[in-house]
Length: 143
Image (tube, rainbow, N blue to C red; front, side, top):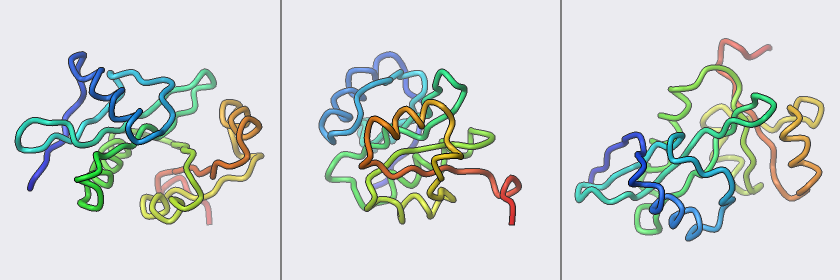
C-alpha cells in the first residue's frame, strides 16, 4: 500500500494525541501546527512527526510515531526526511539508545553535554537514560 505526506490541520489534533499515547512517547508539546502526517490510501493517519521549538531557540525532531501495522515500511523515514528537508541549521533529538543507528542514517550523531543548548541540558539532568543526538546539514560539519 502507498501513503502520502501532508501538513497536519486542526482536525488532526486528537488523532495525533491518540497515536503519541499509543506508542508511549513524550506527550508534552504536541502542537498540530508543527506536524507532518503520513496518510494511507483511505485517508487514515498512519504516522506523524514534528519539529518542536524550545525556549532557547533550539529545535527538536520529535513525536515520530507510526501505527503498528505500518512499521518497517518506510513511514518514519519519509516523515523524518520531510521534516529535515524543511529545516535549516541544527536539529536535536532524544531517543532510546537502541534507536541511535536508525537516526544516524539521517546524519544525527551523539552530542556531548557541552554541545547541548540549555533546554537539552535540562532534559539531560532530568533523565540519564536518553541518548542525545544532533543533526547538522553536511555543509555545517567540520572535519
